[in-house]
Image (cartoon, rainbow, N blue to C red; front, side):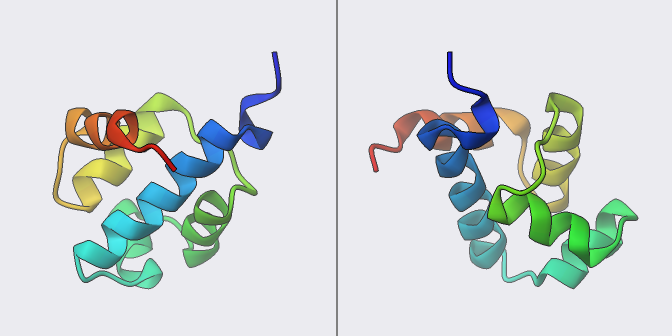
Length: 80
């Protein structure tokens, strides 16, 4: 099994999170402020440099104004 941070599937998640942030009309700085973390945290998970755990992903979903379920459904529906 390939380490997930390097997998195409994980890269799709990173791309999706960036797209969802754009759809929400938020900057990395705004998401970081909502999460109480530095902007570099957002940059690193969006670029795939940092691996997220499920709890972090849930908080990110909330910061983007959605649920973890919606994020996962969007990820599952992606074919790129």
